[in-house]
Amino acid sequence: MNYGKLYGVGVGTGSPDLMTVRAVNVLQSVDVIAIPNSSKHTKSVAWRIAGSAVGPVEGQERLDLLFPMTKDPAITVPAWNEAFNQIGERLKAGKSVAFITEGDPLFYSTYIYLHKAAPERWPGIETEIVPAVSSFTAVPSVIGAPIADGQERVAVVPASYGLDELPAILKLFDTVLLMKVSSVMPRLVEILEAEGMLDKSVYVSKATMPLQMIEADLKKIANDKCDYFSMVMVSKGERNGILAGRFADTAAADAGNNANGQAV
Amino acid sequence: MNYGKLYGVGVGTGSPDLMTVRAVNVLQSVDVIAIPNSSKHTKSVAWRIAGSAVGPVEGQERLDLLFPMTKDPAITVPAWNEAFNQIGERLKAGKSVAFITEGDPLFYSTYIYLHKAAPERWPGIETEIVPAVSSFTAVPSVIGAPIADGQERVAVVPASYGLDELPAILKLFDTVLLMKVSSVMPRLVEILEAEGMLDKSVYVSKATMPLQMIEADLKKIANDKCDYFSMVMVSKGERNGILAGRFADTAAADAGNNANGQAV
Image 1 (cartoon, rainbow over the protein chains, first blue to last red):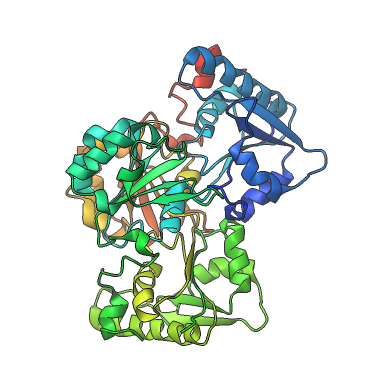
Image 2 (tube, rainbow over the protein chains, first blue to last red):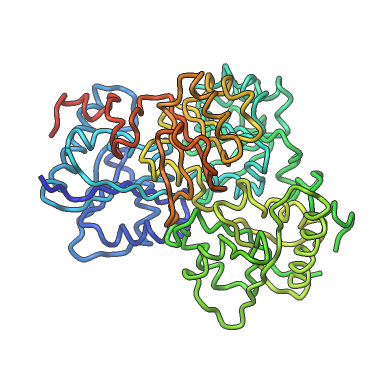
C-alpha cells in the first residue's frame, strides 16, 4: 500500500519565532496536521505555538487528537489506539500527516510512541523527523548560562526517576538538567542543599513562553505548586549568581579577558 | 556608555532551513554580523549555513573574525583578543552585533567565551541568546532514534575527556551522546565492545549537512580519519538495528501496538 508520508514536527519551546523555517514549511504543505491534546477542554500547547506561524492553509485538515494526561493504561491504551487509527485512516488515503509536538519530537515527546508504532501499523511508510529547539537549549538561553564548553559533560535526568542517583551524577557531570521537577521539588531542594549545589541551581518554568518564570532561590518555591513545563539547571562550574544578570558568571577566567587583563 | 546590543545567534546544524525564524529575523536586522572563521583560507561553517537564508542586507557589515583551531594559548589569546576588540569597536559605536555559531550558542560554542568576556569589557551591555537546533536533537533526527522517553536519562560527553568514566556513565544513563569522537575512535570502539554496546551505537558525521554520513558498524570506520563534526550515539534501550531502517526499533513494545495487538 502507498501510504502518505508521516512527519514528526517539533515546534520548539514556546515562542512561535523559535520554530525552524523547515517546520513552518512542512506544516504549510501537508494534507493533515495532527494535533495532540491532553484533554477535550484545553488547547494543545504545540498548536498554540504553531497556529499563528502556519496560518490558514486551504484544504488542509487540522485533526484534533486526545492523549489523556494519566499513566492509567485503562485510559491511555484505548485513547492512543483511537488517535493512531485516525492518523492511519488519513495515511491509507495517501494523505501526508504532520504530527506536531512541543519541543523536539524525539526528546520526551508523545511522537516517540507513534514513531515506534508506525512501521508495524503501516509497513513501508516513509517518515521524516523535523528536529527543533528543545528545552535543552532553550532553558540555558533564558538563564544566559552555558550548557557546556569544551571539556564539560551534561546530564539530562527526569527528576521523578533520578533523585536517588543524583549525588553520583553530580560527581560525574558539570551541568545537570532536571526535567519535570514539579512533583519532587521539596526532596530535590534537600538533596541539592546536602550536596552544596543550591546556589548553583536555577529553576525555570515555561522557558521562552509569555509566562516564563526564572527563580534562583529554590527554597522560596520548594513547596509551591510548580508548572508542568519546569526544569532545574545545576551548573558546577564558575557560574554563580546566574540571576544577578545575564553575565553574572564572569568570575570565570576566559580567553578574552586573559588576553589583556582588562576591559577594552 | 550606550553600547549596541550583542546577540549570540545559533544557526543550527547545517541545513539552512533548520535555522529558526528568529535567527533569520535577527540576522536581517542587525548592523553587523560577526563571523567566526577557523582560518583565513576556509569559509565559516556558520556563515555557509546562514548566508543564503539571510541574503544581502543593505548597509550591513559582515565582519570576518579569526579563531584559530588550536589549543596553543600563544596563538589563541592574541587572536581572540583581536576579534573581541573588533566587535567592541562596533558595539561602542552603538551598532548591534550578532555573533553567529554553528549549532547552539551555549553548547560547545566559541560564543561562550565572548558571552563571559562581554560584561567586563562592555559594562551594562544588553545581550540576547537566540537558541538553536543543536546536534543534541539533530543527530537523533537523522538516525530516527529517540533521545529519551518518559523515564530515560541522557548523558552528553566530549569523547576526548570522558572515556575513562564511560563504563560508569553507561550504567547510569539510557542514551549517551559522545561528541567530537574523531581523535579517540579506536579506543572508544574497544570500550563499547567490552561493555557490550557496539551494536547499540551509531556514528554520525555532518548531521543534516549535504555530506552527512551514518554508520552503524563502528569497527568498519574505527581507524579512518573521522570528521570534526562527528558523534557516536549509544542507546541502551530497545533500539537495535537502528540502520536497518528509520523504524527498526519496533521490537520495543509501545502503547499503540499494545492497544490492539495488530496493525491497523
